Length: 186
Image (cartoon, rainbow, N blue to C red; front, side, top):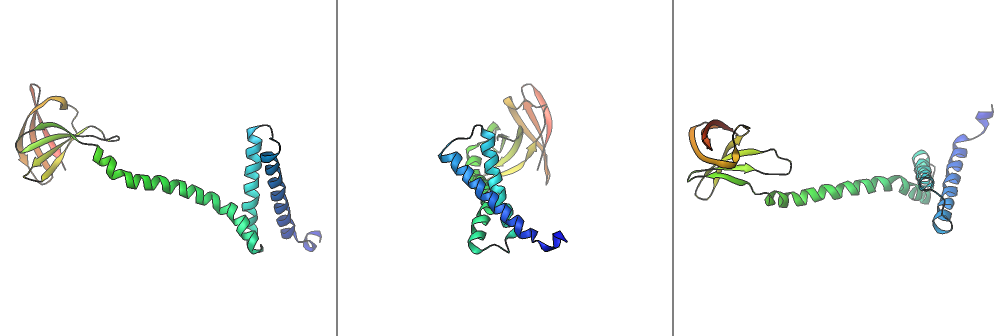
């Protein structure tokens, strides 16, 4: 009988708003008048202040007045907007800077002949890979990547193309005094 007669929803709403106002006064006192000792206590007050405001908006947004919806809604949506802005800032940097960063990484030529060139692909996150490129008059055609750890890429002195299929180019690489039969895969 006791629970039926009282309006608990309205009572908790008033309690949340009172707690929010008290926390606001404590924070203003802490910032402008005296400093409360300890870093964690300041943070605890601030987190409780934000939680009471966002809980008030989340639980009672249908019963709040317009100015209360704006005030308490700000504390719910501001952290979301701030986090999204932080992430968008990083994403936009990657989108804008990636062409520049890619243009700055120039592949190192390991061997060059009249018709072909062997290049080492460079990059911050790329493993060591060697690519075979067929030279043209103005353009060049990518023939494939070699992922062999047995070839010493530092001193490639010769290249002999054995067979060229649609997706694989077979060749003999001369490195130092040894010949290696390798396959460049697209």
